[in-house]
Length: 128
Image (cartoon, rainbow, N blue to C red):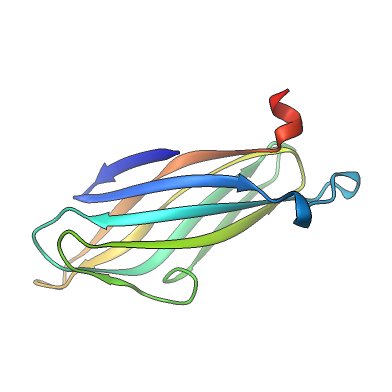
């Protein structure tokens, strides 16, 4: 598990290899990640957008961006947290992701970015 605070927002990431959805013989490796977003600010925030940078150890790089996370744009009061699970497919046993969320301060409507710490996705066979 990895955790980082930026702009008063704590992002915690936990990853899981999804063996039931992976097929190593076809170079298909599926990973799930659980993200917890916690608002340590004294004001309400809303997550508007996400930007991901995905690095596959086979040399492939991808960017994914869009509105919200898993179809929602959560609003977090001071001290509240929001958690979601999503996934990433790789063509090799190892990869890394990082990125940022675009947030809005609901008090003054100013936009700001929150860093998502880099985290690794490693198939258990590579850990031996």
